[in-house]
Amino acid sequence: MADLRINLAGIKSPNPFWLASAPPTNSGYQVQRAFEAGWGGAVWKTLGDPILNVTSRFAAISFNGQRVAGFNNIELITDRPLDVNLKEIYETKKKFPNHAIIASLMVEPKQEKWHEIVKRVEDVGVDGLELNFGCPHGMAERGMGSASGQVPALVERQTYWAKEVAKTPVIVKLTPNITDITATAEAACNGGADAISMINTINSLMGVDLDTWNTVPHVAGKGAHGGYCGPAVKPIALNMVAECARHPHINVPISGIGGISNWRDAVEFILMGATGVQVCTAAMHHGFRIVEDMIEGLNNYLDCKGIAAVSDIIGKSVPKYSDWGNLDLNYNIVAKINPEVCINCNKCHIACEDTSHQCIDMLTDANGKSYLKVREEDCVGCNLCSIVCPVDGAIDMIEAPRELAPMTWNERQAVLSVAAECKADIVK
Amino acid sequence: MSDYQQFLDERDKIDFLIQKGCQINSVREHLNGASVDFLHPNGNVTETLLIGTANGRKYFSSLLISQNQPKD
Image (tube, rainbow over all chains, first blue to last red; front, top):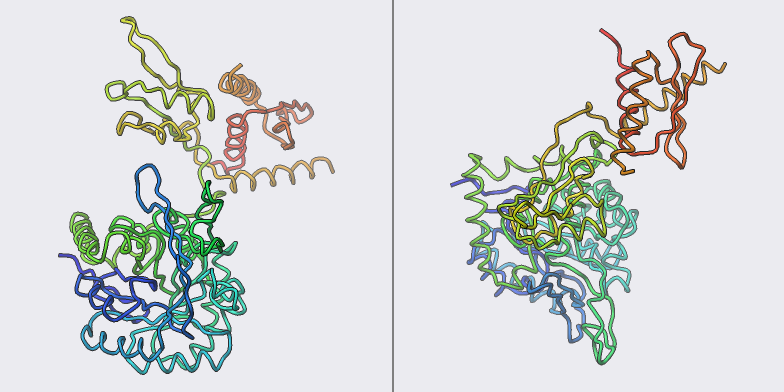
């Protein structure tokens, strides 16, 4: 049995699986049930001045039979009085002293507001704080959430205000609704953040009803943008975690969030630099007990790899993530179609012929049987054929024998500029 | 002519000049690819090749890197 415990900036939990601040962590009843199911921590639904919500609130996109491939919400932060939440946090922490309870906080960008809520929340024994600079809807219109989180100076200042009085670790939760998340992550670090978490939800409009012309969801015939999450956002979140993890000025632990639905997703985030992960949509889709599979899967993975502790794999893939200019231009892969497995559906041929590099031929053998063959010399190794192929194992992407030494774009440009200087000397 | 055939054609021309002892002297990149000037070993004859294919441009760049590496 591998050691699944994590320590994120001093916040300890029995495993890396936390529930994210969202509807699943709205009450003590829910968080206690989650801990009983096995979740290692929970970020309490964001506390602040209690809000008023609308109905309806959620929408989801299903794609080719996969329910909830993406999820959208226009629900705001807690609508319950602070004292009620604090009482339930206190009771939950007393009942589950070894589980992590982190209070998500959102107040107006004023020093006294941050001081007040940090003190009140810490009085009931939370293990840490998460500053919500990410919520993209509703609260942003009031200058909070992502409206704050899109301005590095505001992120830094508010983090600093929270840190002025905080006795527990401060995590800053970042919005993805920004061109470069490392700018706000660095601002959080400059403000004294002990950790960062990402991503919050992405601005989204889920759809438009073709009959009524209403938005999905709509509230009495009107809609507003919501926050998008779920499996569809995972690649966006993973990139943002990785960009922060490899940034030289961002040296705090990361809590990874965004479309994490199973142990495999969690391992990917941890390999890319996250110390632990937060989950919401998958729990809303399948219930708290999905954490059982996550724990078992992670444990089996580590055991199979002979790794003693989950903390041993944090960031192991970060050195493999770089800029495009550092990729080897002379590395070549080509598609190889396995005729024993191929069902001759021709999807690869159509995809290649219409939208890629026209290198898959439809041929007929001596017995009149159709088959598909890649002209390897024309294949650019784009992967499209293997992506659209409906049969596992029918197309392999294989490494072509290396003909030239490794050369990156950056190396190429460096030598070309030297050549240009030499020419200048000759001209003189 | 396929891209690959065009690349082979460009590579043959590059190899021919290299085998004659020419060295890449300068490269001008433009919208049609790159014009590569090869300098003859006697130093007073320059030949220019227009290299249009992506693989051709990778090829002469790799040769240029190799050419600029210190010799043992």
